[in-house]
Image (cartoon, rainbow, N blue to C red):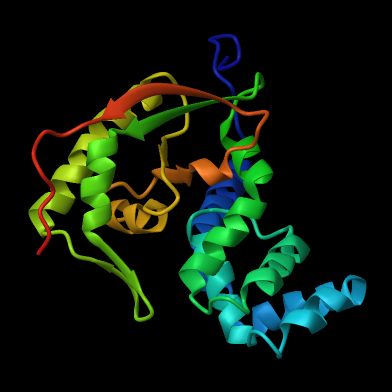
Length: 231
């Protein structure tokens, strides 16, 4: 009867499986323990020993690799291409130990898989972008030093920024597109931290993560005439 009325019946077990899969995906970074990371590395070493031996323990510890992988998973970036990720860490770990930037370098290498997830069958990626002046004001409120990544924007400024972005992202959702915000690489990690609480489903991508065969279609521009004040 449901099919005759145009509905799609779904078995209860399938509903539960889909729900559990979504929960695991959202909390994958918390599930990636130190032992789980070591297991992944041990399995990779069977097929790509040079990649693992070059990185661990001379350049990074298992805990360092775990931290980078958790950052990727926290933004729903697949770590199935673990060999590519470790090769990237091997290329840059001698230059910086900052997990934030190491994760960014890994994202650049994983650009094809990132783009493929959000673009349509015609390779079009529908996004919202930021007004250059607003990007500059946001950049002024982000401090990234050897001590880590810190947000220096006031709470009202953070709230206002999230509201402006959320208003434009609605255009994507109404058109049944993924909520993607495309920004400059130097503010991507900081802006993701700013929006994580108010816009948890927002995907913040940088221009470095866009492949050459991906066609960008901007459906909205986030702009604000008021300055974003720092603390």
